Length: 217
Length: 217
DNA sequence: CATATCATTGAACGGTCGTTCAATTCGTGT
DNA sequence: ACACGAATTGAACGACCGTTCAATGATATG
Image 1 (tube, rainbow over the protein chains, first blue to last red):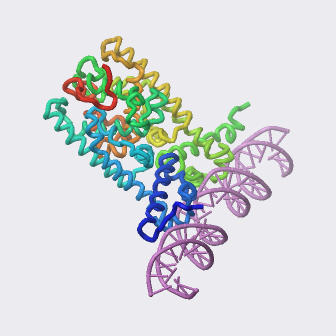
Image 2: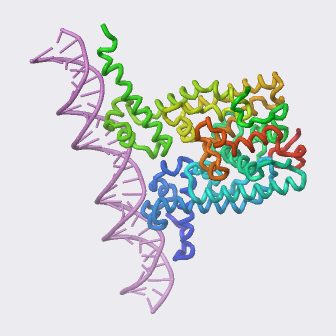
């Protein structure tokens, strides 16, 4: 029944590995890594569970391969995200590839599991954002800051945190951060208040002195 | 003649259930719910695994009990968080109870697993924040907004997202959101850029560019 | 056609999981 | 002292896990 497969020796059989990897990314993104069994991935990819181990060595190695693929996929789209303007910061970065595995959703799920690949990706993402924002300051688009790197880092954390908590954000505001980025209306309920806060600020007068607001008086 | 007589075992045995619940919260917060076995909880609490099931019915029921306890513990401390000022928003809310189980860390872990208790807690938290910020607008402390509820929601999402991603935030900036709240220096690297952005804003002028969410003003 | 090669499979193994259950301890009322 | 019920235990069960391994199927080459 599988007429689609291949004249495949060692050249084209990569489609099998890709199919496995994409199925893994999809399931990892949906239910998390721990809750996804190798058998479930095998069923989704249409192969035997043992083949996954034979190809990738172990479930953990497969997960690493998924991390690397997602990190690479997002790195390719990075410039697009950067061009979205400094307001949204790195949130716009995870642009979904058409027809590909759910990269953004995977990122949202595995940001908390903490893999080396994702951590490294965040680091370079913040570095790029800091550099980009520094250019914005020089060109007069952004206000200068006491904490150039800290500002970029916190902004990135906020954006990524909103992505991680997309489920709660959608329940609260209706904004779906996982929707197609082509649809601005889907995330308007998020970008509206966000841009407003980041442009005007929220305090009517500059808060003098004490940060952190420990002692109000 | 004594309510204590029989309760030496049936009234005071709550200490056993409390010990189990606290151990569960600690381990759930550390390694996540899925990665924590009933046997590990039992070992940490100094009881047999079967006792946990006998007391709570199932692991899932124990998790629900943990959710309820954490939600209640944070609700009690809510006023403290509110008094921390509107800048940090609901981040200050999860004030750790001294000597108790790691409530904040538990919240950071289970925010993404999505339990009904935690979701309901977030909803009321945002409601309170919106109400509190509305008062701030009336009293002149905060700027008015086009999206009163959305602003509170996004601010809450940012704060909770930063809590969820505390590991990355600490690696990036050194700020430890899980440290004792008595130590402002531990989170200064976060509160500094955060308050700066939320008071002054980051754009020198209203954004002329065309990001994803831009439409009519 | 024969054969070596390699992707692929199905069955099985050891381990851990949540949970069940009979048995045992222990505090207490009579 | 005795019995009873609650608290607690240890052993076991079935299910599922990731992984191993010998066997199978297909294919290109001699």
